[in-house]
Image (cartoon, rainbow, N blue to C red; front, side, top):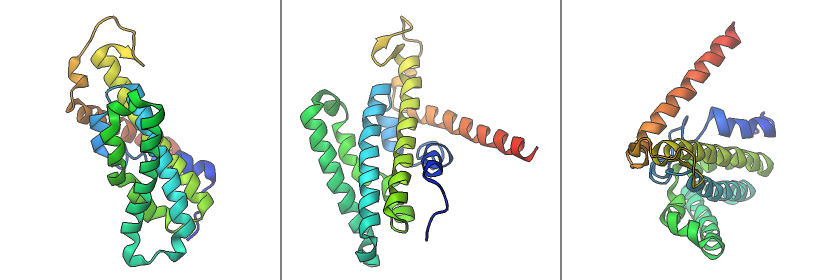
Length: 204
């Protein structure tokens, strides 16, 4: 089954139309647990982008030799391999960032968004299409994490990227774990509203 979308459409689809956090509501654990700052969101986003792209390309490359009965274990092993790579790289070269989100890096193996994309897209499409789809979904996840981090860091700590921009802490509520669900809900509503407005404008 060949996709009829261009490379740009695949990327935009992952960022907007099928955003992993705000539209597909997947991988809520990291979205809620680690999105307290923009930098945390960015670093985890980079890791997920790397694993998504590499896993998608790997499965697309070997899809014809993967037996249907063992496809899910194959996906898991593929993801685990690339997670191990990025885990070791971060531990070696970015120890401070790794110390903050080490457990979440390992949990990427269980991120539903990656496994779902391997099953729904990479296992059926070409390596080229899977690469761009992986880029889109990875950037979509990164965008979602950084957007959540922006809101929570600014409103919860009065800072951005660690720099004090407000001079005070407006609402400490936003740095608490359950505030992540609150922020995700608001942003999901915003995305749905934008879609409704766009469709109405298109019909008009």
